[in-house]
Image 1 (cartoon, rainbow, N blue to C red):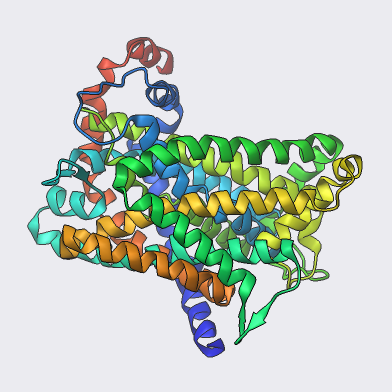
Image 2 (image 1 turned 135 degrees about the vertical axis):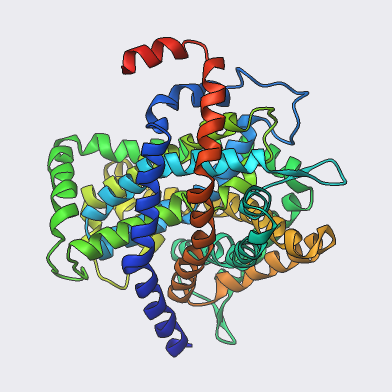
Length: 477
């Protein structure tokens, strides 16, 4: 197993060192220019759409704009926001957080583009629900000659769901829960605490996904706002307790983003390229911009205008990375927890940072477990919500390949792999996730370059319908 893990690590290094960093950032820059800074000038309209100002229950689709965004956010706001950020900073230094911000800013234009395409080229199923995503806009947007690329994406996405949205989530959740509970209970080489945690999340996930996208939308619409606010309040408490350190922390983040960080203590050290790579890789893992997963959820939105869901979708990287990932990153850097031993990583490192940061409140409340408890609850909620949405991403991709009858067996297999992910070595899962993320992204990025003109036309046709758009256009001139 160790040899296999080393092989995966080498493949991961090759894929993410230059190829995907260049393609993802390059695509984000291109779409930002092509869509005329839509992440800035379309932000306000996206907020109004999400708030339900333009909702029409008679529009085609399955979910309201808010529910579609919540479903996509439930997948993106996951372990990457807690464990992924900690790993990026531990290995790449504080400067990695800056590159996560860059991926989010550029990723807003990428999300706008792919989610507009998802609604435009979605299809209606015999049961009245809709299906969409890269496999559909590749085949229907580029034509039948490109179906091989659509099949390639669907194949990678079907498998990637078991890693990105399944085993990685269950593994970090089980590891965090085991750390909180204490000493492991080994039986036959397995930690019973971790296995038990895997069984619980599998059962909880199964109860939701059996009801399909409408039940998923109902659950995520309630769960996502609660878990985001809960985590942000805990992080903000630490930031407010350390306000005096904020200027020096931001200086270190921006300085190290372009210089790298010298190795010291347990820190692995990095040069500029490695710092950027860690930030981009973990940023993409967190907000999934360019991967092609989120369009599968956004395709379900109730709307007659495809570009409306594009405006909603551009909020996703902002919330996920510029807000929630920043909370984790600032806590990890503020407390200095990233200098800790290299064997403590992921959610454990974030738990250590929160424990240290919340120590004053822990003393007042007379408990030593406040920080660990906050992170454990966050991990459980984030992992659970991510597993729910990624099961849908996986079964839509699988059904594209093998028909709707294959969905139920796929969901059972997904729940089984949640138990597996909770039990195996977490490093192997993270390496596998990075590789699968990259392989999913490649077909999607090709289609975004080729179909960007379609989205630009949709945007230009819709903009006159936005109240006050003419005034906004004059101000830009």
